[in-house]
Image (tube, rainbow, N blue to C red; front, side, top):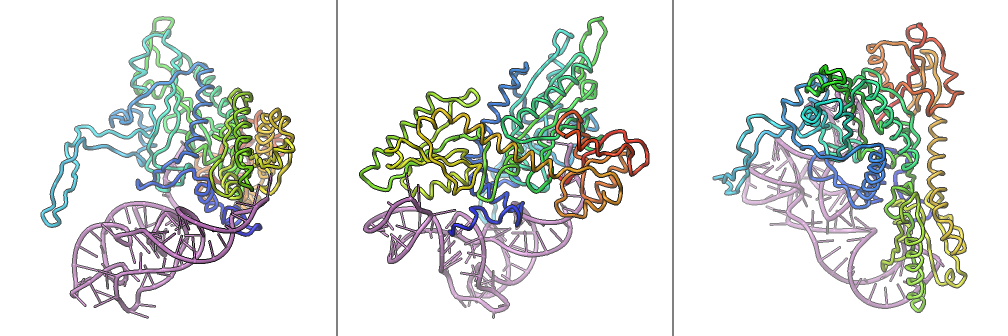
Length: 513
RNA sequence: CGGGACGUAGCUCAGCCUGGUAGAGCGCCUGCUUUGGGAGCAGGAUGUCGUCAGUUCGAAUCUGGCCGUCCCGACCA
């Protein structure tokens, strides 16, 4: 392969969706399975999820939540209880209708086929989300205001029969966490909804190096059955939006439908206020699209299963043993003495008997944050050859070994900060204010136009009409204290150009995945 | 779910129009050479041609159903 070529083809510029798929393949993250719309998550991809899981789980527990597990199959009648919710998920539910198979021999071909039999009296829906079945449990568990708040999280798989699957971003089955909480008052439930919203923002910033715009969904875009949906919106490198996490205040809709009621402080029966919130393996798709480049995956250090990869360079047979020993010794020192954000460093020595150039490119494509090469000359000079994934693959620097050991956590943090800064800069460059109809329509005639902010006082119908016309949505009504610069916000006019009315909110529009 | 394209070796694809039971490149294995770089040469292995049926003496090739993938649309917290 010639040196001028990128490791991934096509490039982001040439064909972004195809580039995305090629990165997943080159980094060995996941593949399509025989089962329609479902993915096989391979070890390098699953490792990212394990780290996301582990690190988010700590935050959930630190804020008082406990994990539990509920059934995969939900009685159809449960789903029917909340009408809006049922309607919202109706078109993407997989349904289990039988409970056994019968072997039937085909007289013509002689082959045995398994035929479903034993039809169920009541079908089960494979959970698309668990509000209803967890709500049913909550109804039993909550008797008194003393049982509240009830703060539960579940790590699980869910199934939504999507028409157009895309690895990680939209698959028929995906992994996620779903938090479900019940509270005594509206205020407490809203505090919870907002707290998790903030937790997600912090997590994406501090762990995935992804800046997000936090905001509220419009009624059109809300979770079916919710009174309020808060979202975090990430911009990826083709300037589209990805809804990366949501936190819903469900009001008393589900508690009334499912009778989650309790004896209040004054002895009267009251309905609980519930919330739900989740992030999924979609985060992996988001981080791929946010950070990766034309040479493959770029992993933020905290979710890299191998943060430092040491590549022995063994040009001569007689120094081979010494080089390998030095590599293993360095790895062991790093593992046992250094930490990054409280976790022991994850260090890997790639001692495979293949050419070191090939190894290097493999780790470039897999996105290892730091690569270290050690050869006979480096041992002699007590240096290491340092390469960072946030820099060009050809870039290298030599560093005193002791200094490197001391500096590793800082270097990882530099990689993280660099990724975040780049993503933030890119996003800020691609959000603008728009205050008149002509500019608004012109904006969406461009292929990759980025997001715009507009004053908004329109109706749901008007929102719907504009969405259909330009294949856009109001990504959110941004929380103005967070995410967006005061400069930019000031540029949004006080009157809605669509209606002529004083603006009620600011709307952020974009195309999305 | 509608419109289009496609499904042949691990990957990318040729062969199909004009039916005679499979090919290339890359990858893989072996050997030699090379060695601060995804190298070179030589040899080798790998396919019930998505699946089920039909037409035929004979199907990767023709016909139909089904399944899947990709693109566009609809749908999508």
